[in-house]
Length: 365
Image 1 (cartoon, rainbow, N blue to C red):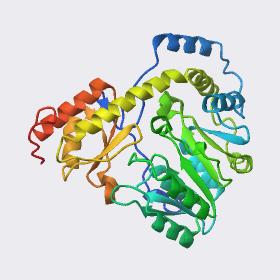
Image 2: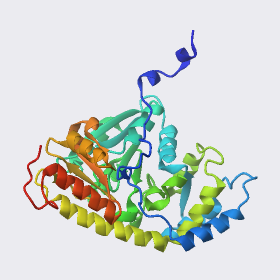
Image 3: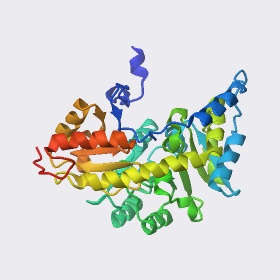
């Protein structure tokens, strides 16, 4: 026998999630905030870290960080928080909590890929309901799937990744009411949508999940979940002790105290998002989808792979979603960068489509 014989069924046939290495290209593929910190803010942060001791384990309950999150986002006292090593860990914790024979995770298609990978990690059945042609919820189909599969968990991203749009609030409320299990409302892109499910009273079977990655702290890997104490208490049993390190928590607390800096950065991104949506609309071969996030999804009229390769050759990396298949075939997801980075992207598009600044003839491919 070999050690491989003891591996869980199907593991050898799966592939690890691969992330392209930094290669000097303009990076518009990972929905990161492209702005760094102002120098005075950076210097004060470094001074604070100099006085932070790392010879002791971090606060396992993350009390200071939780309090700072409550203060910054006005989180009500009767809600509890769970801190994770990015939202990916929180997704895994949710799936681990409901792992068991016959249990099902339900989401939409397309959706964030980690929902499926985490479900499979814990041997949960994963079912999806296709979004309509404009990537909106098909409420009747969702309700039918809930009735059929009785899912232990439903994941709904708000806004959705990779489509960028917000789902209808009334439809989400109807799904929550029909759900027999837990509903996770994933608000990773809340800094750009400027709306939140927390503006409504959370039902006991709902948790809101967020990350500080899109806020501007992707390198820290910090996510948090908000929900009723009874739910968070059970999920917390699956969190490994000291899952978040001291330097990350100290940095997050410092950054949240300066949240207005990041709010201003988000404002810049929103202005560029509006400009880029208008600019993309001038290319007749591009189908441009509405976005409430910090990225825009486009469909390239049969030229998705060729356009992706052209952008790479032009020194720009976006996300090619064609391999996902289905409604994402021929789609590219473009993160909003700084104005000069976005201008470089538009210049590359002009070159590809053979027009000047998106205003000339669009010959396609």
